[in-house]
Image (cartoon, rainbow, N blue to C red; front, side, top):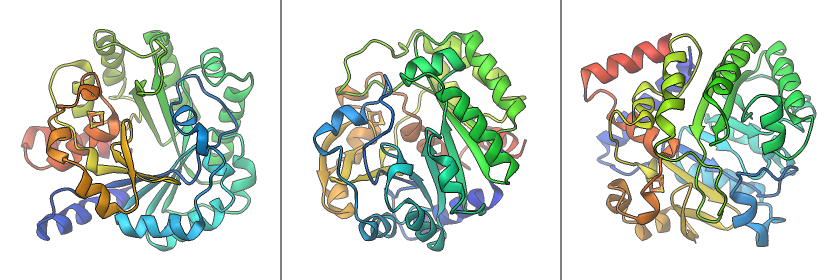
Length: 332
Ligand code: SF4
């Protein structure tokens, strides 16, 4: 299965509960960024640029745990920065699992060995290893030789010890379709439990030209959609149709909310209008319908998975054909 059954069930029950309570704008995933410091300086990373003035800040543990309670989302993705550099990463992970949240640690893998000595496998825990291409491409994008080999070694270590491991690959302009296919086949052989492949985000703070244009996206993601029949690609087929340009989707930025040392970032993971002191303030300050219908100029070329996969999750059950495709995809 591409997503743990318990996670799927918990997510489904949570959505039903929220709908019954009459709520419309509720989060499915909390992107918890307890720090923005990193031990790499990846070419496509907007965080280390946007937060350079607060790069040394770390969120107090109590605040990080309380923000998960405040959002209430069943899935918490601990990211950053490099989350394994966070001084409270072990108690934070254990605390979130004690809250019965599905915890995903998004990491560049460099500090993993130390972490796994302290936190054993748990059905609520998974790792999301950042891997943007094969050796030459990945090491160039993270600007350090040898990182690809560390990732591979850590994936093998995690799998041998019984952890759930996914990968997260950003596809940039320079990554050829052939390399995307090579990477998917390679990760399949390594036995990863899931692979997420997304187009590079055009962060508002970055000016470089490494991102896929609308015209370049369909060819690369058509290949991904074909390979999703045989490999554990976790992008939903509906989102892949959207990346290929065969259907349109509205955005649901409230489904993935971001909390970092400066507060609740809004309106979405990608663009920043401000940081708010509380989750309630973020909601009050954001016109969700405006962003849902992609009226902001910054939404023009955006295909960010968190905004659009959220839409797919909320639409589940509305179309028999789409729901059947989704079921077949996840149960395969
Ligand atoms: S379309 Fe993109 S930039 Fe606009 S709100 Fe959605 S995720 Fe954010």
